[in-house]
Image 1 (cartoon, one colour):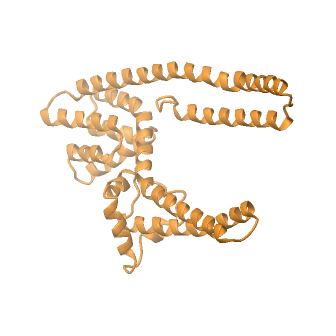
Image 2: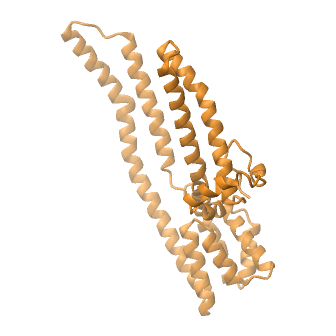
Image 3: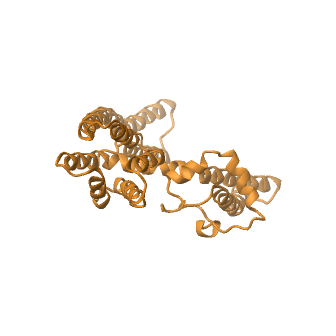
Length: 297
């Protein structure tokens, strides 16, 4: 089972045993977010949607109460008095914290499912190559999947481990693979699994189907890396402009403008420009890092 939402303040272990007296609130939310049931399964969070929604609601209420005090402190510091506006700021912070945390909690299973999909895509090419090599050497599909499950292919090994477990419990190979195709959020894995299922049912060669799939996936990842390399050149140029050119040019422009206007440029302005440039640089570094293709390890 996947780890629970790291910012959820109500433990999922307790959420599985909610009293029926309050569970109607969770059922109401789960009916609004109708895809939550499927997202929880794909994110491997083992809990009923109604229970998860109620835990999310309780956690959001706790966040709202916590930010009442944050809003009070901010209002007093900003207004330097306790007035009606201080209370408005308090409740504004509280409502925003409640709404934001509730929305995040409800969307977290979908985000977690996509995160698992990215982990699958990261290892999928190597695992499919291993599967192809083993099938080409005469090993059966089930034994090849067992080998993938026992290997160190991260989330891919975990997915095939569940397939092997289903087959060992008496499920047909095609049915177990169909279950995997419906469960995963990875479009690449889904496509590859359906290709194997179709070949199994038609009696064709799985080796030929997998060979074509591996070639396509390899070409796709090479294209992604090339596009990223070209995009990285542009971002490097932008970063150099912001990190080196803009601060020096900005200070030079201010010095010229202040000398023409008869006023001087203070140390505070220079420090502010330097801090602003540093913040923009850090933000750009994190943004570029998020753009790194998952195929690059």
